[in-house]
Image 1 (cartoon, rainbow over the protein chains, first blue to last red):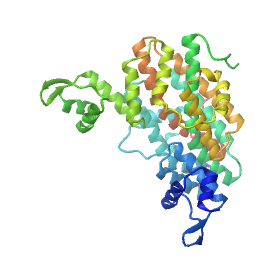
Image 2: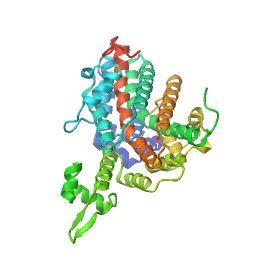
Image 3: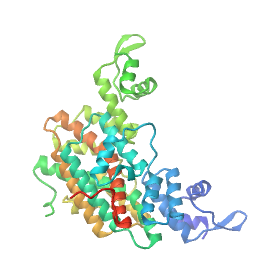
Image 4: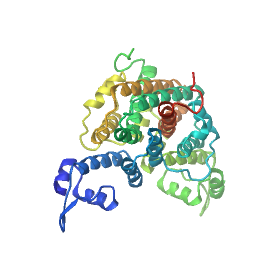
Length: 208
Length: 208
């Protein structure tokens, strides 16, 4: 198909497609004339992934790293996750104090030394932001966070497909694209819990 | 204190403080001379909040809305949450299909009509991103998400302080600043679960 049809099928403008081609996010089409190229279904599906990542707030540079991981997956399933996290977790700047982060990592059942340093740094930076704003998560709330997050992660990893190509896609896209969904659902659930506590009512009967 | 001491106490550069003053994020100090102003502890604590918000990825415009909510809190505790969510949830552009989002909202025990439209729009956009990338969350994983998110929200709302001024701060900052922590903890927990499934081991014994 020509670039105009690729645009019509994906809803991405021709100008944006040309930008992705220049940035190397989208592979070149097959030249059919000096000023014309032919695209196929691989370009359609790749464009959908690019658009979903960028609309989820992933930067162009991170999108490129995610696509590289999709194209050149590591051999062992467990390494996939590290590659996916490495692609989307910015590296630490400066010396974050990781001791509080290490305690949380241990509470999740993990040796801090086995935790990806980028991810450990992300926990440390999140804790620092809270501390700077003088915001303390109460201990019992933190215990609920750790338990709930562990349930989420176990269900996600149990769902990773056995087929390696599918597994890469699932892990990389699941890590990135599910984040906005979880955050939005948290806001809905906070409104429900707030109505239950402060208004003495919820929208419908709470689930059993 | 002078601006140089305010800078030293908060770790925010003088140039950045002047930028926040111009943007109206930080109230003016008390003039002590034509080119000099005196700042106090209110400026220190406000600067820490601004820095934590901006470092968590909140934009200048959203930071201004969050600060407005802190300064002019709504009267009823339940309305606080709506104001906090309104400040940090971008409004929907275009016509998102909200029917799938409404089903999730109902599964969380909420009537879609009572859900803040910005938040409902955020759920709809997150689902659209997943669909565009052809990524389907398995039903049993989604059930775990809903259950875990409900536990998180109930614990958070149960922890909202009774004192109104403290409640505003807790709700507004908790909504925004805890997000990066939850996302980082999810990545840690995914690494643990992946080691358990694919490597047959975890870092330490899993919690009972």
